Image 1 (spheres, one colour):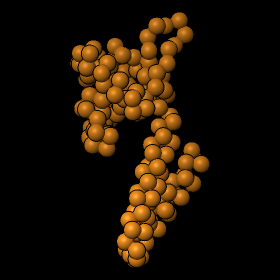
Image 2 (cartoon, rainbow, N blue to C red; image 1 turned 120 degrees about the horizontal axis):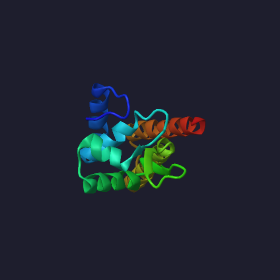
Image 3 (tube, one colour; image 1 turned 90 degrees about the horizontal axis):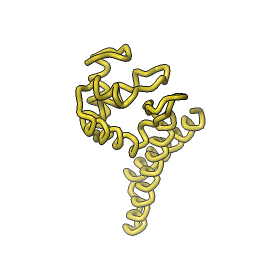
Length: 147
């Protein structure tokens, strides 16, 4: 793989595996995202660089970049006096991701509350689970306010 960024191959492979599993990304999308995480200075990587770095077709790179855009994992920008688009990791992604987690946990609590109401009696295990989810929601909200 030609290098435009200094990367650690082991960390890169771990990131590819992690993001592939966590976000259900195709292999090339996971590689693109993992590679962008090494762009610490946010200079951006161009489309053509991705084609060269990953020895992939333009259509493959294009469709995988589209996936990352749709998931709001990346964003793009143009440099002054250049037509090329450069890609970087979306800085707002953590807020977006954890906001979605809060929404899912809240929805789960709502659904489980309706089951408890339908059942007509309290379940101690459910109450412990609900307390854990509520605590997690509050912890995530506190952390998000600091980002």
